Length: 306
Image (cartoon, rainbow, N blue to C red; front, side, top):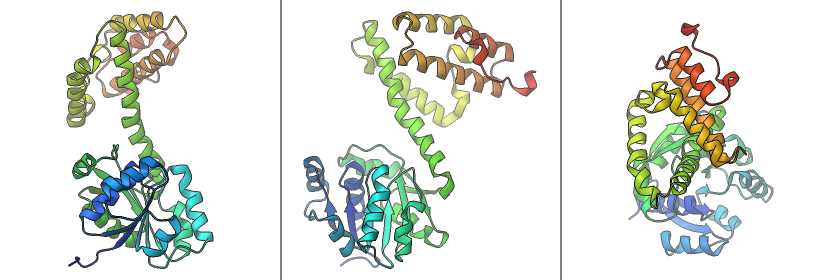
């Protein structure tokens, strides 16, 4: 017998996110009544994570469900919502939630105009599209945005999936999403660059060398913030920083490759932040700037150091 308040759920987009969240809602005893899947990969993912759920056309899903989950790319979200509105598909009282980090509920204006209830539920997690993601949801936060009266509904859906809802104001969504992309996506680039450098000097298994170091750094940074910073910039060791930048310039043949650009940008940012915290003296921040080859771009000094 179904629990009170169980919903008929439709998933539009059986990508890595949609299929996993559909499975999580199903585990909470909501009834997933249909999923849209176009590619072979999405169909296979739907069969694996949502066995027995029929693959339906998008309009059929909207017409049959009480909760529609829109798990589509950011740029596709607006046109999809508008197109369904023109077809008169949205229904009064229907819950319509999207999983985009960039947008709040403003992009669902056509949904609201039809009397449906817009929600934004963005999981702050990277997805593999496999069942292990369901376990990861238990340690995951969602950025949720909704009208004040509807926020408890958005929060309840997230809690039912085993995650933690964190309210994000409509106007703060782009900055919220930038924070996650900067931390997660750029971390992948950083690891790839460090691995490339290690392979250049003959390290055959960069992952084994970097793994313990990066895991410890991440855990320390999350636990202690910027006070966990170590290394040559934190010590004001301008000579070592100069040696790093010279080696990277030589590796790139002076062409300014992406590894050099990233190292210089992050070293400057690290020095500035260390200066503002008082971990480095103003003169040390300037020394680091000169060691990086751009003494005119090492940023404003802390007011107390002037």
